[in-house]
Image (cartoon, rainbow, N blue to C red; front, side):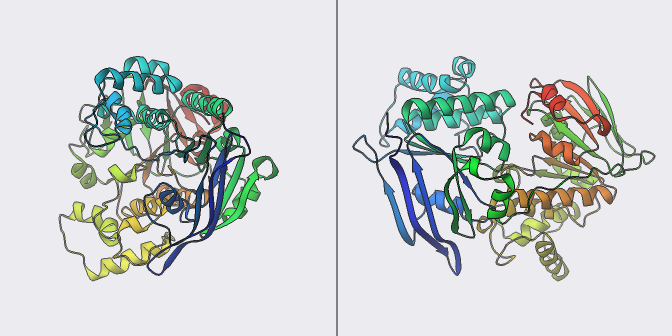
Amino acid sequence: MLDADLPLLSVRNLQKSFGATRVLRGVNFTVRAGQIHALLGGNGAGKSTMIRIMTGGIRKDDGEIMLGSQRGAEPKIAIVHQELALVQDLSVAENIAMVHATAGLTIVRAGQRAELAYNALALLDPHLARSALHRKAADLSMHEGQIVEIARALSIGADVLLLDEPTANLTAGETERLFAVLRRLVRETGIGIVFVSHRMKEIRQLCDVCTIIRDGLTVVDATPLDSLTDNDIMQQMGQPGAREVAHSRRRFDMAEAGLVLKGAEAVIPIHKGQILGLAGSPAGPSQVIALLNGTGRSSSWSLDAKGWPARPASPRDAVALGIGYVSGDRRHKGVLAQLPIVDNVLASRRVREKRYMVRASERRECLDLVHALKLKAGSIRDLPSTLSGGNQQKLLIARWLGMSLRLVVFEEPTRGVDIGTKRDIYDLIRRMAEEGTIVVWWSTENVELLELCDEILAFDTDGRVKGLLPHDRFNEDALADLTGMAA
């Protein structure tokens, strides 16, 4: 058991520049034993750069990083990133055991792999521990993969555990179980946990203290959360405070025909300019999304719309029909990492028009979109990796602005972005709907759906349709009950 007053990790005056851009200008951060510490800041504040330095991914320019432990050795630091880092062709047991190989030639026997994986997974999800050890990572759902990643990090006996948006794809029950495990680990072993999230409700449920970074500087240093209001935190982050949301009763015209979604359990008409929310864990919404974006020829859903096939044959076919698609999984389903910002913005137009050259007028249009979206980029010739996660998400939305779309699908577009960027994305979604585009939007944050949508199609954790909620029946608790997802 570690001393509760012991600093496991201390960062002082941390500085880092990339070229002429100063990302960290003097960050202070301390993680103590037995503490769950929220690390907060807007997109581009410097959180990711600081974490990469602390975990050895990049070198600091200046400042001190001090590690200390009562165990007589430097504490182990493990990180679970927002984007999954599992080897898809390996089994769950192999993925967990790989971090225990101390050298390239080290062999971890099959029996040891199974024991390591079972013990680690059983802390989080006993059922998964019993059923998934020999499944390939490629066969896991997103939330199962997240649990395996966390189990792998815990299995090395970490003294400091960094969790970057770990609940983004978890159900309410899974989130509660994860939080219970984290609290118990802190209480029984005294480890320190750093929790990075933009969900204030979860931060308050789990964390003891918070540090806030803004523009590369620490503006709130290890302050108890119960001494700060949500508005205090938003203001320190440089974000607008909470505001009263007025739901619009008129976003679409019921007389204007759109399309009909047909499934085994429901027939859902959608009208021009309507925002239809999809609520629930991935099993149900992913079937609808796969149908619409052209990747789900085996989907149980089909379309009924004048001039449209029952199912788009491919993503290219979906784009040709006037269907846009934005995923919150930026790394695997969105950003073209090796192409500059201008090519990322113009990618959808090129697919639709079957061309490859960029006209001078499009460069100007790209610049206009970058400015309109408040996208913090040095140049449209820069790579997307120079942008923060929230700005990368705006980049994906920019692809579809100015195009003539009949429908656009958003798959968790605000995953891992700060409240200010969320508001910008909400405004873009509203603007698309007001122009007559049908919007289909899946989010695992029920409060988002209740704020923006006209109707919400709710699925349970097994992917079954549980109901279509009209605007006048929206209720946070009722939606959480239907879906089993945290509000």
